[in-house]
Picture 1 (cartoon, rainbow, N blue to C red):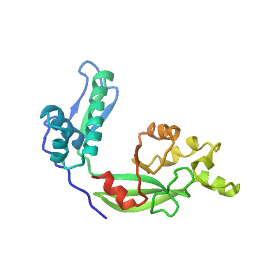
Picture 2 (tube, rainbow, N blue to C red):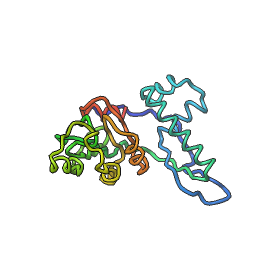
Picture 3 (cartoon, rainbow, N blue to C red):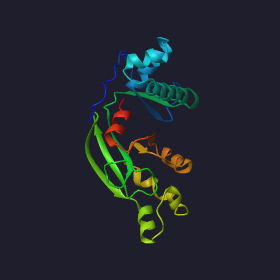
Length: 208
């Protein structure tokens, strides 16, 4: 298992919360240290994205994702009267993934036997727990053919499955429909699509 690269944070803030002066913030948004570093490198130092990624110690696609997230949060503060709170990211999170064997990512999201929850600390999986997928159980009990996610059509998967995932920070899947994706993102869970079934490789991608 890889432990992942340490991100190189060079900007040291002296203030850790920001927001509107004429009213209380409607909501506090957390801005991670790597997101703040992305703003510092790209928008203050005006470096090219390739240079920013190298300085921060991440891949260019990862940097592009960080700067997009950071800018969106800053715009939300200005446009909607929200506050910003700076936090140090501990690099620990819980990811959930569809699985038949509880340790690899199933090709299809809706028809996997389980939803497995992996607790990740500093790039290492500490434990994995799981919940049974009621959609798979329904298909199995009614002896319907289980081929792909189309097999779950009409079973209200978009309503039933998202609440099962509420303990996770990140959902990892190989395929995901637009409707259920919106439902899950609406719960504040990030989504990472992957081409691999190997959980170690997935974790390495997430912390790159």
